[in-house]
Image (tube, rainbow, N blue to C red; front, top):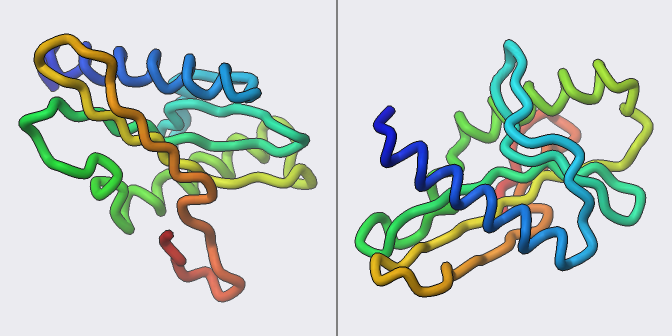
Length: 131
């Protein structure tokens, strides 16, 4: 992965963290890693754990960064979230998956941020139900 790509992602995660904190979220973890994958942000809000996937693109790139959260990515996020819940003994805490999509303008203007709350969940049968 290129340094430019990593820098864009890092800036996007910083913007998402700031955005969420201004809306009452508390960031518990950033870039939490385990064998199952990585969680960009783990937050808490109103008694729930919120696993946040951050997708950042520049204005000329793909139009909808959230579209990159495909079935395979959702499965990896779910495995990592299960690992986090196990390690922290938090299976009894309500949780959800959010996606924060950020489009940065090449001109340096403020990024356009779209927050998809409860973006996807596991159905009772184990299948995926995307937003």
